[in-house]
Image 1 (cartoon, rainbow, N blue to C red):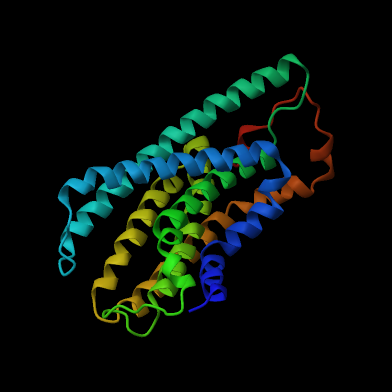
Image 2: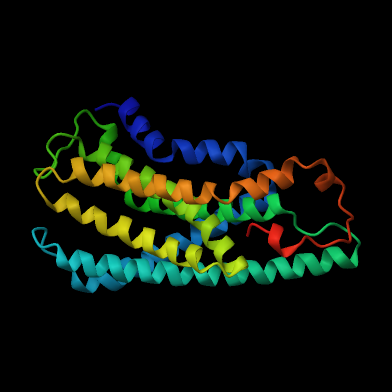
Length: 263
């Protein structure tokens, strides 16, 4: 392969995330800090998990059940970390709202809350892509490519990039769903996120089968689409508020109604 191919694989994995960063996150310094903090937090969590499992290496490449245990433990750990991140965010939100009331400034609006969750989720997705895809792409910039026996129809680097893109999508919008579920005490949203995360992660075990990547990758994108659709169900109320001219003229001292909060 060539440098162009390596860059192409990287853009497949992170191109949509880069577009989201440029169009939404980069316009507000606080969102950039949220993204960087989230990325660092999730990278640390993955490094901690890899350190724990290092004691059990090497795992047999022909046996799937040790990887299933690793996936279940990793997803459980990350979902616990998501709850921790929400509590930190909620405390920060309360501090900012209290400060806004003291100086007679507006509290956090719906768009602010949604964008904070989006930036946090994007950080999770970027960390996943960096850890599981970009770290493997160095050989892709060389003169050749690489295939594995179980997926001889697609280059290994392309498979990694496509899987990374699916998880970037799932992680980014799952954070919005999760924050909405925690804020509104919506059990459906609270359950949806860890279930989708667990199912999507376990689907990668399909790659152990011969030609499994041709089945596993489409299944991952089904989960990504389900995540997007579930997140889109929360948009009507938010778009109504965003397009309501009266919403732009709310009294600075008037708190938003709980039912209008997305996050």
